Image: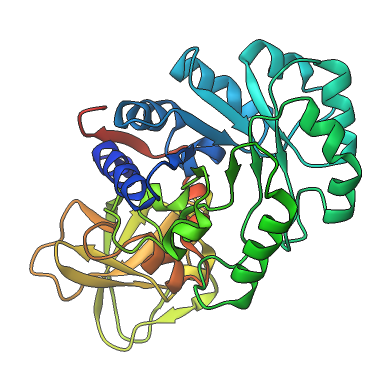
Length: 349
């Protein structure tokens, strides 16, 4: 194996969607968030697998992400744009039949003037202070905007991965206050919100990270595995240093494997000296610094060194690896670089 190999289990993604769909309240539709190239895993293959599982509504971050998604899905499934209708987006929104989630008075004005009659949704700010209309803005334009026929009114929870955080209930109360009686389908819950319970589900849930095997959906199936090839073995004497900056000094004679992969492939430099690779079920410590293209691992204790070592797999998931690097699973997934040989497993492969 000459290159690092990233394997993506499409059946696991589909199963995770079905599991989150079953957790959603009866009568609630379950969408799928596939922004950032389906969290780095390849939007065309992932979206088709999700569509085969039953997803009919998809969310991307910006209109440009809708191009590959519409090509993969064809006409029919809804593609909603979380970033709304930004300047210059009108032609993409029209030609690809995208549904922007309008999040400001400027965006509402832009959309209604440039694409009158074209479908849209609304995003309200219930306490995250990121995107969306605040209550005073919403009250000022609600009658006009509702008369134009939005397809969805949504908001986003800031602390859903912390079930006991008081902001969850505060945002729920605010969402009710801003939207009760609007007569439009509503959505508040992404993955974490689904797990908070049915009172957060409304008409549509929007799972993202839970589809891809990440927390807080602990019951989800793992989706990715990553193996890095061993390209050289080197015997290191006690007292010799390994890698940039002499960051690791061998305390005893050691056998060091140099692997193909590094921070150019999305493997965080903060993993230096903290991460673990696996030879089957045997852990092997990363030693020295993660560099752009190479990583060094102590394999002294192995009876035989395999052709490749696993960084993601049955013994270490994306959140485990993220914890070792002081990050989150989202960053690990979306940072996986283009140099991997990508292999898709499952019926949708």
